Amino acid sequence: MGNKTIIRLNEHSPNHAEWITVNELGRQVTEPESSTLNNFPDEYKTNVIIVLLPALDVTTTFLNLPIKSTNKIKKAIPFALEEDLACDINLLHFSFKRIKNNAYIPVSVIEKKKFHFYQQLLMECNIYPQYITSEIFGLPMIQRTVSVIVEPKKTLINNGLNKAHVLENENIRDLNDLINEVKEDANHVQVYLDNSIQDQYKDLQEEQENINIKLLAGSSLQKISQIIVNSNYVNLLQGEYAPKVKFTKFLKPWRYTAYLILALITILMANRTLSYIQLTKYEKNLSARFLYEYRNIQPNANNISDPMRIISGIKNANPVKTDTSFFLTSLHELSKAMSSGNDILVTSITYQEDVTIIRLIAPNVTLLDTIRREINKNGIFQATILSTNQIANDVESRIEIKAVAL
Image (cartoon, rainbow, N blue to C red; front, side, top):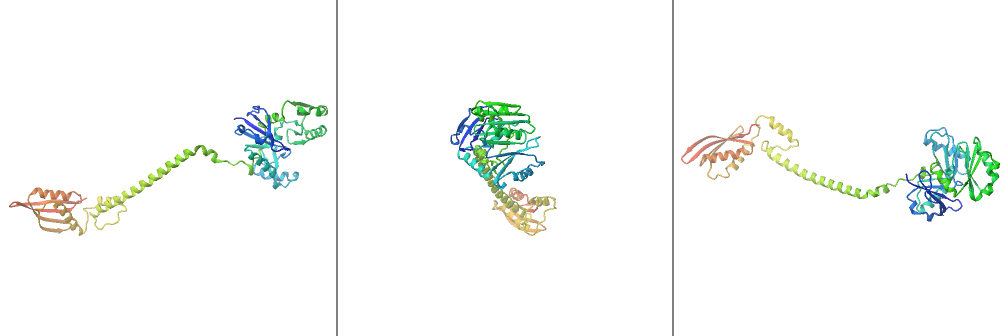
């Protein structure tokens, strides 16, 4: 899961902070460091960062709301706390966390102005935390136990159930009173005492029953960081302060792949466009050729939008029906067939019922057969030599031209 760096801000000097890096179990990885935020090491900025705000600036309470819907809880919290807060609820930022099998919902409240100030302070130092919470959650929360961390300038306390407080510059008598106030059903008191102030609280054990005092060997941040990573802390980065997903960060490593894909798509579209233009031209050429051939059967034809129907109709029809233009078309085919023979003499032409009879004189039968085959080539007409008569050195012949029966 990786290491986590805990940054604890100082309410008396906001730009001053202390930090420590722990693993996912809360075990210390680095020694605690203390300096201004400007000196926060870049090497820690890649870790998961949890920022602890001063508990004096964040009010933490616990609500028992008989509501299951998260959205409804979110709407109900400001009104449930309105009477206990000195500030207009519109000027406050509310955050909460639902805990499974726990009737109490921890709620953290901070002035929007103050929260914005802390965020701005972090961003100016190029620190972008994944979590921002109150330092109060770094105090162990154990059922039926009052837990206390006593530091030189403040004291953190909770009753392990539904109360959490922070005291500033309190003496032992005030601390005793507060412990008694939050005790309720708690039967044990656990105090973590900063080593530098142990003399001030040497009589604390005499004032309380079932109390266990532990001296903190090092910085209290070591104890707080150990607890915070596994606690049910409330992340203040909710609602309008929830982090926005920066898609560019995820897309950046893939930009060259994206450029390549875009180039391939562009080439593909250009190729498709070119193919479309070529196919369109080819279609026009085919249509022109089809129309030309079809007009050999139907000279007045114009509409060939459905060529399959036309071909089917031709196949299923009786011998091709033509009009009087058949005569001219047949003569045109005869003229083409005779273009290679200069010694051919046409003596008569007869046309009746789509049949053309040609009488001609040619030097030999071979030339007559050549004319017949040339007329038959296009498959539209069928030429037949009906008769041949030898006259001196020439051959007189009758050739019949008619449409091919489909």
